Amino acid sequence: MSDYVLSCCSPVDLTPEWLDRRDVHYIYFNFQLGSTPMKDDFGVTVPPAELYRRMLAGEDAKTSQVSIGDYIEFFSKFLAEGKDVIHATLSSGISGTYESAVAAAAQLAPKYPDQKLTIIDSMAASAGYGLFVETLADLRDEGMEYDELVAWARSHRKELQHWFFSTDLKFFVRGGRVSKAAGLIGGALNICPLLNVDYEGKLAVREKIRTKRRAIEASLAKMEKHAQDGLAYSGKCFISNSECREDAQALADLIEERFPHLNGKVELFNIGSTIGCHTGPGTVALFFWGDERVD
Image (cartoon, rainbow, N blue to C red; front, top):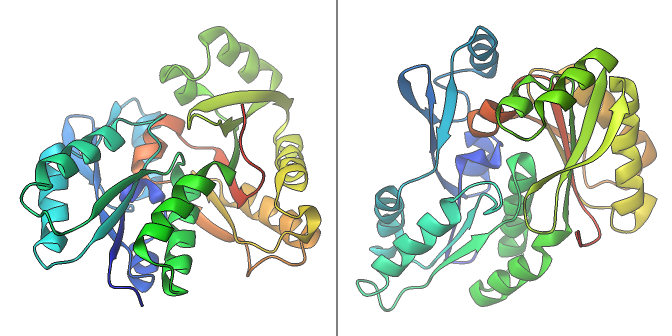
């Protein structure tokens, strides 16, 4: 195994056990539920069901990125041990955490001139960010050296496809992702918008689809169109969801039937607090390696 450290932030939306098994270190994002500050600690403090129950009951949920000071403390642990670090952040199109991590690295550079600390903007979110980090861990374990892994990550990050839909637009409207008018019409007409993460790492509404079943089928169609090697896709596939596991499983079943060469089963995860504060319940998000995002 390579001797450098691979790290990320908790909105990878995997699990602590998963990351520990892969020897990936992590730092928590922060959020506030009502008047109480909390850590996005993979649902340990506030399980997803409780988060969404309280949000639906009217409690405000706000997120905040990792501070420069917290990053300095986190990175210093490894640099002081003489270890080089590659840290992947949540997409800069969604959060300012990339800039905070870069600022922390700049402050640490004079103190640790012999160590490498590289910050990579994953241009990904939720378990798509998780799949990005998972792939970096695979390449590291296969023996890829530090500089080669950094180059690979920056060269291939836009090939990580994100497609997701929501059956409840309330929190997308509240967060400004969907207009109030569109939210009212969508609710009345049972519309589930299909969104993705674009080439800048930002959220983009792509289609307005009536009924959840059609949204699931449309997600499958996007994978058929964009997956590497088409129906012969042999990579990994992750799906995250916010309190709608049955919908996520329905999509996973279709994918496993349609893509017989997948690397393992489709893995299902909960959307964590950082992303969930903005989506609310009812969101299903699909992630796989595909063609490069160009718009």
